[in-house]
Length: 275
Image 1: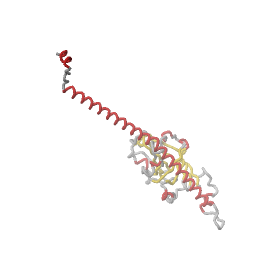
Image 2 (image 1 turned 180 degrees about the horizontal axis):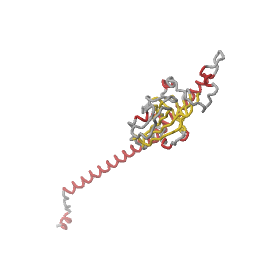
Image 3 (image 1 turned 135 degrees about the vertical axis):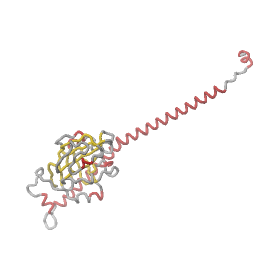
Image 4 (image 1 turned 120 degrees about the vertical axis):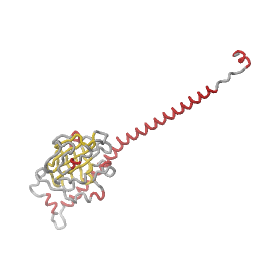
């Protein structure tokens, strides 16, 4: 039969089922190809997002923070140039006389002078930054702003002051927060601080030197005790203090790239230097 069909030029008719199978295979190939393209596109977008969060936000925030530090330094220099200079009557201002008062040399002040309530108020009309925090061990120098909002403070690479806590140099607890990762990540390496390391806080009125005293490696984000006037962890009571003093508190997220817990560093005021 087959030989006869070939001699007569009759081609065998393929079953319809075979054509349906071919169409299904073609559809599957198209679906797999489209799915592969979609996965590649999503992967590229995720990679771009990671690069943006871990590199670009750091670069942008650090540059902005450095500009803000430089602006504060210029402003303070201008203020003191006006204050120290003599007026038309040839008499220095009371503030300049206080600055030059004998017996008040850098490092010799035992009882710190409270930060005036007005310090930083004028600065925050133009910018929320009003102080500069420096940690020599970490080669860190960043502006301190009022509040801990992400968009207006922390995401700019600033360190944010908890509004309910005291100001630099005041009795109680001067507490600040900063990002551990992304957006300038000023507090990325605060876990490397050791007892006795220096932390400086500069304002328009004075420079306050704190010494690191305790490190709380991990606690709950709801542990409000670390921000109290006499800081003491409510979650881990073995960390903290029992008596009044002049304290500094640095807080950030831990472990890295998460916000599950908080890392806390405490310091004590050891001396101050008026400007």
